[in-house]
Image 1 (cartoon, rainbow, N blue to C red):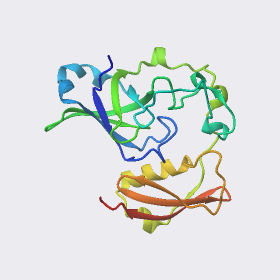
Image 2 (tube, one colour):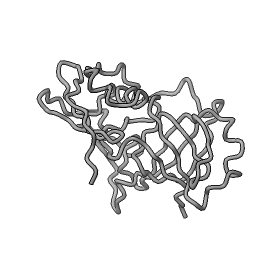
Image 3 (cartoon, rainbow, N blue to C red):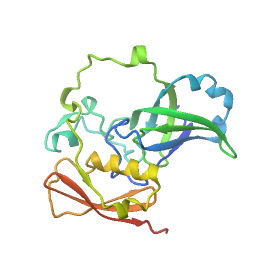
Length: 226
């Protein structure tokens, strides 16, 4: 039986805008909050000696009773079907995700126990986490590995954001937002220069468009509370 041991706290209340893989935006900060049953300092003994961690988690927004042997990867424009086990699509027989994050620190927080502070996470706020494992460089890193159809993107997209808008955010969040936008959050098959996209980030509504290869931020407004 799988047990949820923790949940992530991140800047993304929605799926749209989350980097497509972990480690793409190092400025992103998140925290791993353990469930009450697992708030035991002894369970983390020795973890401070590792620089990176593996998070095993649930695609909680895509849990379903059925599955398909093929999916349409956004990397291929959403027009080509590939085998589900040749992708990292969230639509899987078991909705399990795997992310490598950098461990920035461990701290004791009142009412929360030991909290892991990480960077580079690609998880939506509140995502259930099944396990935390240390990243071991000598066995987990393979310099001669091939990336198949998911080879690393050649470059990021230029971002044009007026300073007056960016100054609304704390410096750390502003740096992270620029990194997220530079990954071009749009679906790979959308190329409408007139379309204005919106994403939620750290309590802000960010609206942008992409034309002539440049992402231009239109507005950054505080998200209204329900």
